Length: 352
Image 1 (tube, rainbow, N blue to C red):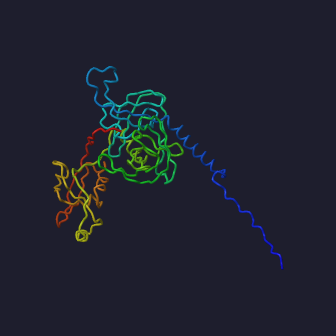
Image 2 (cartoon, one colour; image 1 turned 45 degrees about the horizontal axis):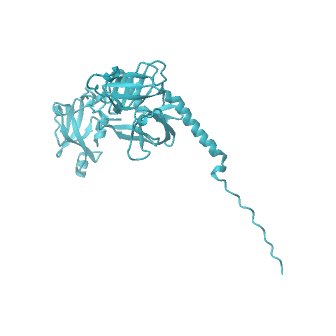
Image 3 (cartoon, one colour; image 1 turned 30 degrees about the vertical axis):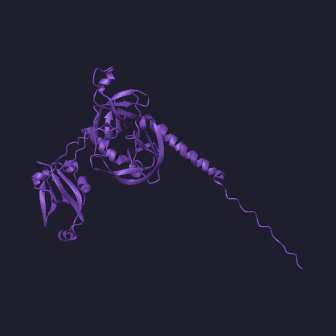
């Protein structure tokens, strides 16, 4: 009988555990260094903004008390050496006075240069020495998944740093005025009340967004206005103190159109803007629009929603003879219209 020969199996190769990988620690160190570098570079530019309401009734105990009671606070950042600071419009809305607290701890009175509630951006200015301006970057170069850092003053905790990634690009966010803010950055870098107006920064230490909102009670759904929007708005706020937009005096809502109406008038959209109200004496009233009309075109652009119409009412059409096409019953009409400059919305202040 032959003896059986057994071959011992080769020892199994042990898979490396995460702790055994020498690269993990290096990656964490690189991530930490990136966040630390950004925080050190940008934090000297970040300020706390306090909005003051009506003065205290009765005799003031100190000179500053005559400036008013605090009604809310937020964040902002210096972006020029001569004291221009960018923040959110809702941080300073309705304020009778504005104070800025610098990283050095110095408090300065600020003047409101201009604000644009439709994009939730505002510029204030302080007169102070040795300011450190932050660098504005190109939000157009951002990619989903890219590291970003948010710096601000949530709940009054000065210069709080949170980090995350760009979750999505090209979002739209509705401003307090009802208009949509386009080209909004979505991030999971944690934001809380008080972060509003602070910078969202890339790994190169460049500001790519202005933190503006979070969705409560959701986790990790935070939004920032892109610097591509801020570039346009800020230059006009510094020059003119406002953004000029056109106004026609129509209150409308989106409505679906009957298929036979779409086919009969050869419309590219299956929806339009139903006119639900008209301001007396407005351009729409002078043009002959009526409640119940459905707007389907403005000048050469077809309109299928209220937000599309808003985007067309820019400063370029202020005082420019225009046309508006409507469907009234079974008839399509084209009316002559002369848009005028919109007045600044009167927003009620709210706590930040």
